[in-house]
Image (cartoon, rainbow over the protein chains, first blue to last red):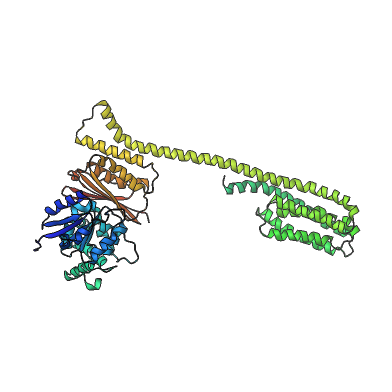
Length: 218
Length: 366
C-alpha cells in the first residue's frame, strides 16, 4: 500500500504533557504523522494551520467536568475526522461519541498502543475499534442498538481483554484477518445506525467499497 | 421454638380440656333429655325437643372436631348461633312464672355448649358469649315480670358459672404456659444456632489459616531465624504469600462486588512494586461463592506477582459466566504449571512471546 504521504493532525487538549507525548508518538510513526497545531480549545482546529489537518485528536474533557459534545458535534458536522481522546471510559460516553460520528474513541490509558493506528485508519476512512469501544459495544443494552452475533460479541470481549488481535485469533481458532473483519463489521454497523453524519457515511461507504460488508447487511 | 412448636404444646394441653368440656356437655344433654318426659310441658315438650336436638347437633359437630383434635373452624359461629337459638326455642312460649322451673336445664347446659364451641378459639370470646347468655337470661326473666325470682336465677347461674369459669381459667393458663414454653425453647434454639454458626465460622477460619500456615509460616520462620536465602525465587514466594494474605483480609470486607474487591487486593502489592496494573470490568456478572472467587483470582494473583512491568486484568461477565482475564509480561511463563481445582473453574493460558494471557472462567450452576 502506498500510503506513505504525511498525515496532518491537530490536537485539541489542555494538558501540555499529553500534547508533548502525542507529538513524540507521531514523530516516530510510520507512515509519518505531523502535529500541525495544538491548543486547549477547539479554535485550533478551525483556524490555520489546524484547519487543513486530516485528523482532529479531541479531548472531550476540556475545561470542566461536562463532556464537550457540542464542540465535537460541530467538528463532525463540518466533515472533520475526529478521534475522541479522553480520560473517560464509561460506556454511555463512548456510545454517545460513536453516535455523534467520531472515527475512534480512545481512553488515555489506550493512547500508547492505539493512537497512531487510529490516526492512520481515520486518515484513510477506515474503521479502528479501540478496546474501550469494543467493551462499550459488547455491553450495549439500548433497544435500538445494532444486533451482534454471539461470535462478534466474543471477539469484541476478547479484544478488550487482551488488546492483541493475534492472541484473540489464537484463542478463538480464527485468523487475524477474520478477527479484524468481525470487529470492523460491527463498527461499520454502528456507523450506519443512529444519527446521520458525513464521517459515518464515509466509513460505511469505504467498508462497502472494500467488500468488508454487503449493502444487504446494513 | 417455632410457631408450630407453640401450637403443639397448646394443642396437647387444650385437647384434654376440650375432652372434659365435651364429656360434661354430653352428660348434661343426655341427662336433661331423659328428664324431659317428667317435665309435663303443655305442648308435649316439642320446643324442648327441638332445643335439645339443636344442642345435640352442635355437640356432634363440635365433638367430632374435638375427637379429631382439630379446630372447630368457621362453622363455630354457626354453632354459636345454633346454641343461642336452642336457648331461645327452649325458653320461648314458657309462661313467665314457669321459667325458673321449666327452663332451668337451659341455664345450666347452654354455657357448657358455648364453651365446647368457643374454648379453643379464645377465652375472651367464650367468656363474652357466656356473659351475653347470662345477661339475656336475666333480661328475659325481668321482661316476663318475674323480677322476684331473680335470686333463684342468681343461685342457678352461680352454680353453673362456678363450674364453667374455672375451665376458662385453665384455658387461659394453657395459652400462657404454651407461650412461655415456646419462648424458652426459642431462646435455647437461638443459642444453639449461634453456637453452630460460631463453630462453623471458627472451622472456616482455622481451615483458611491452615492454608496460609503451610505457606507463610515457613517463610516467616526463615526470616526470623535468618536462614532465608533471599534470591529471586524466594522473593517471588514472599510476594505471593503477601498477596494471598491481602486477599484473605479482603474476604472479610462487606462490599457490593466482592470479586472485584478481592482481585484488587491481589494486585495491590504488585502495583506498589511498580507494576502498572489496569483493572476493569466488562459486562455484569453474579457474585460467585468464596471458594470459586479464590480460584478465579488465584491465576491473576500468581501472574501479576511475577509480572515485569504491566498487567491488564479484566473481569468479564455475562449472566451465566464470570471470567477473570489477565494479560501480563512474564518471561518465565512456561515454567508455571496450571493447577486444577474442584470448584468448576477452568483456566486457559496463551503465551505470546514475553506476554502471557491467562483466563479463569466459572459458569454459574444452571
